[in-house]
Length: 103
Image 1 (tube, rainbow, N blue to C red):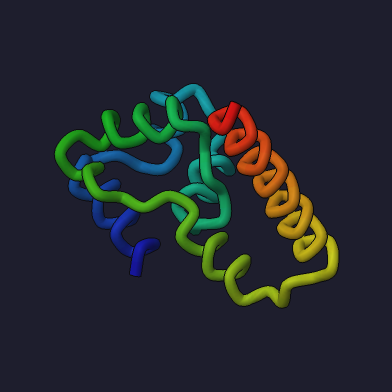
Image 2: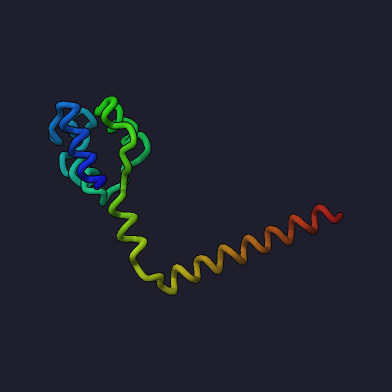
């Protein structure tokens, strides 16, 4: 769905992928990756992308396909350990904050 929205916005703005790439100062392959949803460009590139498409660029979702792929991946032990580490660090911070307010 989102990929079609990028294509429609580009057509309505009267631009080709190559012309958009020239306006943004990026390689045409970057535009292709953005439009296919597998690449999330930096915020400034997203703003420039939307600006170049004018009113047709509003509401575009960057990285839609990347999120779908990531969300469907099984969690591995590294993810679990990172989450446990974050939770433990937060717990230590919360404990320290409580001790400071009790003094």
